Length: 322
Image (cartoon, rainbow, N blue to C red):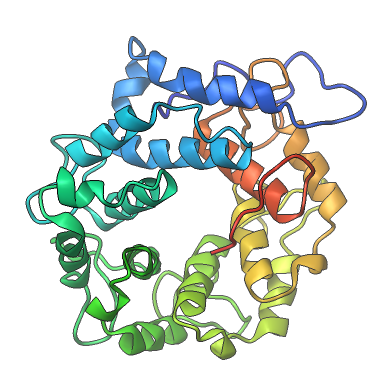
């Protein structure tokens, strides 16, 4: 799956008066991404290849076309990215990292192929669990992304997410992980990348998601957080990630999924958000961009579609906010 942007642009040659999601065009766009290997950008984005497969596959499932990508080739590529230590890199020959390992597990679960870890994987399911578990700090419960030690609440959420899918959550100290997330809470109700860091919608998603997996949403100040998240909607209907920033389609997921987890989904004008997302699609070539007029890409395509699914847009499969 390529992370190459374009060739389409949001809005294309003009949108119809009655906006609608062009499902077939989006399916064709995603299917075309791995056929652009003669473009430099295809190779420059190799470090995101496995994530791209997950994004494209998820979008296709939400669009109601789960078989649009070849299942066997998808599984073969995922397995080819695994290392002897159980972790996965973004593509063969790249170092293992938490983020790619999470995408690998999510892909295999999505195509009902976790058993392939035992059949063709280098370590099996438990080996993947051990790779994730050894990245947790015994001191504060945080998680590193790889052997080099960078910590981030994204890695913590990814660890709990993947381990819960593998049914191996007991491999890590969930209580310490919860305590670390709680230490990242801010006075405005949001969460940052680490204790003391500013609130950001993306980090709020991973922190609230981690608490949801751990069944500790009782720790969230839901009204205060809901207020901060609802203020992310701008006059054009789009959402930003923090105050004074531009709107971006990807926050249709980060903000709305967080609101869904705390039961505040109605605190956003859904009709205005849907119109904004639809204006960010290319109605002729498919794909969704960050905002109208920009080049489309698979990252914004999946999160735009997921955002529409969260607000109940017709014709889409329901998405789990976690």
